[in-house]
Image (cartoon, rainbow, N blue to C red; front, side, top):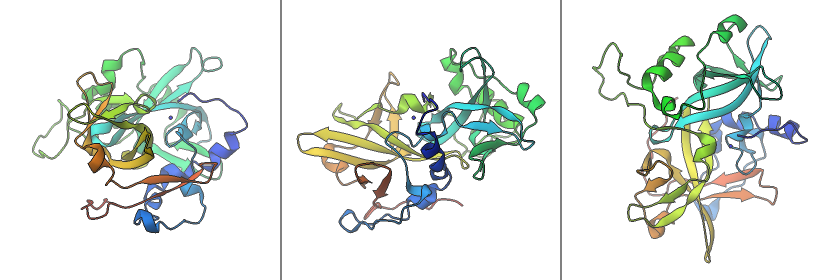
Length: 285
């Protein structure tokens, strides 16, 4: 959701940026599937297929002094903890080649809706000295000490436990799990514990300011038709090879999960239903 090219859809893409920042609004249309209410069209509810994370790819990042820092290249996520981990910014180079990749925590970004760009509160000189991101070192994606250093560089405390943490009193602090690029998570197969195929990841619903992956949409396709089911992110885990996801469900029970459906042929807006007869933990403000 990260190859990006500037084309005729760029203006449309900018119009949809707000959907990342108003994830809570996406839930306002929840209800039973048989009584879904069509919400009034708004930027907060518009997106294209496989754009719930590509909306940010290619978007310019500026600091508060109106200096261009680069463009967002991709985002990484700890899916099992339902957390976004890093936003990777490309700068310099020629047509995206040979430039630098710089890491920043998702919670450090704000949306400048008037100019349709992302803002990062850092001087250009400090940004030049910020931690780099190496795509060749995949193992480093999940190194808690490195990711913690990125957070601290931008004045934020890590949300996870790391080895050199001063205190370990709070056992509720999670450990950083397996971190993957969100464009790699897209399309991953989902199977149950018995190896039965349940579908694949078609959409990630994210809240960038909170640094969270709210939920994913599992899309199934069979002779009986296509279904899109909303899955709580923490209900998923990676398989042993970390190239697919495991869900403790069957096809029969999966059909009881909330549905998501596109509205109209353009697939630019959608509806979600709630979790009927299920306890859903309240989200912290």
